[in-house]
Length: 357
Image 1 (cartoon, rainbow, N blue to C red):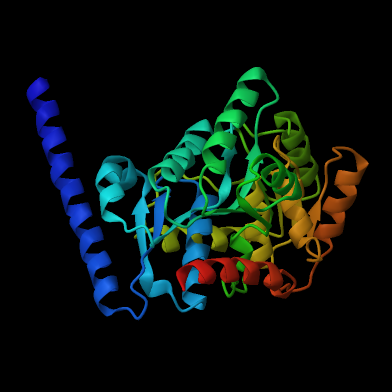
Image 2 (cartoon, rainbow, N blue to C red):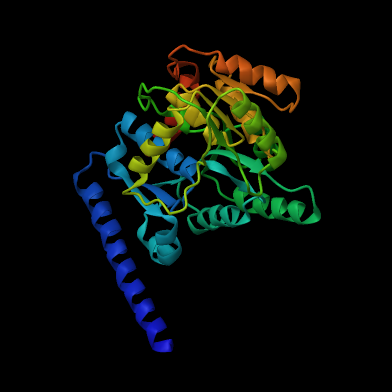
């Protein structure tokens, strides 16, 4: 058994040596051939099956391409970072930019993600670091307060840290508690995506509901709604923005396109997932969104409430049925419009460009 484990570890060492060589070659190419020699490192990007997180990273790549600096990006996945972080610490130059992908990761809800961000911020004290649009949630308990104090001490120590906040509650917390950090109020990155919409024949009702730490919608409600739709002659299906198998950098775009295609084939989507709602927004799909425990769906809706085919409801009674029936009456081919969000994405571009140039 020990011999087998030693062999596995040896193979892992070879694998990550190859990964490091790939990062080294990519970095050397940027420093040799790009007009600006700085690298932009996307550090600790997801390998898991949460497509919302992958869509964020995909949108970050699109943002860099739109800024004409996409050729300077080096992406390092979470697994690669955990294995190579000591070597990367000595390899990445202090003028290089570091980008931590956005999401709902700031705080105690997903503490391993918070620990990842703390580690990166402490490990690279001289680099410009950008934490892309985040939701923060620190538990109202003694433990939550202690974790907030720890994060406050770490983040305030970094003089070149910028945190983009995708809801006002997070912006207020970061602005007040992380006083040494530059904070900006901006949307989630996924609505930055354009041209993902495909015209499709719509059929049936799609349920995209959480069954994890962030779930707030009772399972009984979902069953009642499904019975309601079946009695009215609608086909119902379940889906999720989290898939069983992990997603790699290589398969990211294809897996996202499959999910967008599935959502855009529904007459209506009912979801309590932030990116379930946002995927509906960018594909022009009618949607009724419910809130989750950290209220990030409610806050996310504030950015896209100008879209006539997206509704939000935190009342599980008559108001919910009214909004469902209203969205079912939609027969128009809707198109996503990013224009109202442009000033905020321009703010992100401005801050990144300032550090890059």
